[in-house]
Structures are given as C-alpha cells and as structure tokens.
Figure (cartoon, one colour):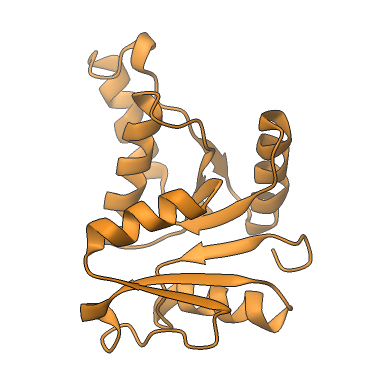
Length: 164
C-alpha cells in the first residue's frame, strides 16, 4: 500500500492483524489514519505513530468516520467485529447507499464459509437479483492492491483503504 501511495484508514489500534498492517504501512513510508473510540484507546493500544489519529466517542462514530474517509473496504481474516463491519458495508452497497469496492481477502480460504452462506442465501431466495451483493474476492494478499486499484480506476478515483 505504501509503495502504491495508498492511505490506510483503520480502527486505530496496535493490536492484532490490523496493527501489524498499519505498522508495515508506516515502515514502508505510507500514510496511516487511525479512528478509535475513547474506550478502546488502552484496550487496543492506540497507534500513536499514525500520521492522523482520530478519537471518537462511539463505535458507530468510528465506523461512520472510517466510511467517510475510505474509498474502498478490505476485510482481512478477523473476528466478530470484522464480520459486523463487513456485513454493514455489504448491506449499504446492496441498498445502493454507496458504490465503493468491498473486498474479502480470502487468505487460506478464511471467508469461504461466508461465501458459501451467501450462495445458500441466494439459492433460498433471500438475496434476490435486484439486491445482489457486490464484492470482490482476493485469494492472495498480493492481489488486493491491484484489484482495488482496478476498481478505483473504473470509478475514476484514487483509493484509501478501510479495513473491516
């Protein structure tokens, strides 16, 4: 991301996979924007090295700020919070509230059960053709940036990332 000039917009903590991604972006000379609610500053160890660290009052404000600052969303393997943020962005896209790319980084098949569930929902008629889910799937980490760059080019814009 850093070498491609892409800004990382993320949840603002040093912990876990996203903390490592943020540190790697910084180490590569990239720009990092963290958005963290006050109550998580200590628990997630706010990334003070980020060029911009925005402290908000609630998780809702965090998600709204990340949505506003990002041009695309990437869901790396993660927990329930990642799933919740991913599904929210998929829902907003499904309802045509945004047309920003949503990409699942299906590393080592992590998201395959969810992709199977989406297929099951389609088969059962709960995802109708007029409300189709729109998402990209990258099976290798090195495909994420090129896929999002291509999606951004189709939309005629530059790209910032938000990790879901």
